Length: 536
Image 1 (tube, rainbow, N blue to C red):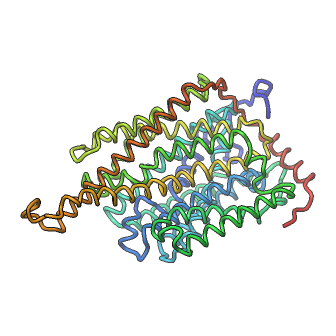
Image 2: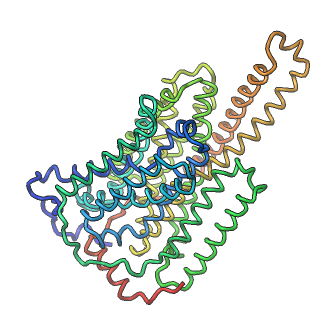
């Protein structure tokens, strides 16, 4: 890693890809505009899933699977994104990504074939990550001349997590006033505008130390992709197929196990496997994976409870429910600002920041446990949703920063990012909700049976109430009781985790410094010269 104290002054920041007819101060904002367009694109919008289900033959699980396939595509790209940057100029990369994203967006708006939809989502995620990295890496020194990744990741999560909330609102509002397909047509137009501006304003600058796409373990990339997609399939379709009773789930589990086993076996003799044992066993990567699993399991009620609670118990429609994204967005912005000031600038310890993240998760769970009920107004949900957005973005930033500070060789760092992307994005969005959802289903059945026991003599106890309406009330009441129970148990678990963090000893402070780009090029160039031919 380079030492920022020995770096020579960089001079005024400039982007040589953009001609001087554009003022130097505006050049970085052009790439921020590009990255916002790319982040809003992606082919599929899960917030509009109910509208897609109503107008197509697709199920809710089909749309979720295609949406999560985007996350898999983004995660699997991390391991090669530096190689892509050194192989193609910014102009060529943006034009390629724009073209593929336009095609993927059109396919997602037109097809009703689940395999095609999932494939389009996966491809869109892969090229979305590539385009995002092109833009962010171009302006990195503008954001942090010292190459401080704690500062850079605050910007990254501010953009990425904020756009997730805003794109959901865009999709729902567009579906309400026009149709869910119009969001796709709008994004196709914006992607076309990005390509036009790229042609006009981004020059084909020669890439120094041109590095070919040789020595990449593409077989390993395919096997890891299949493993991640099978894992996602099990979590998304598990309840629909009744888990291990279905041959589809057992087949996906066997395929995932086979792909994982083959990849681990190949990693024992390949010189540069797609993901090495060094990345998989790095202490900071293992620690981040464990924290992600615990933390996002505590917040899995976001995916399982909040929509059901707002729609079934509070009676919100889609537009009222999507308005809640503003509260989460406020938490994300505040969390990024706080992390920037406390973690990136003041160098607060990882332990302190982790405790703050879990504290906000505890506040989120406590609010729903103590105040959840029919009388809750929409404005009253600001506090828990703000806490959820604040806590999740704090945990994400600090543990992504810790991976770069883990002391691993920079050639392994992109592989660690792939592991982090899978555990922090894919698993947190699929595994934890699957566990909490199955827990909720069993508790609702048990509580409904208990409440129904008092209705055996319904002619006397419920005179004048139709039987279907009576049992409908029982189901709603059982749902409310079950959700409150699970919130209570998760609250206890969150408090225990917070106590463990508080009493533990953690003196480490952020110190993740990104090496110079010419240093990174030398690392990859040297690895190509030293690498023997790959074998399957």
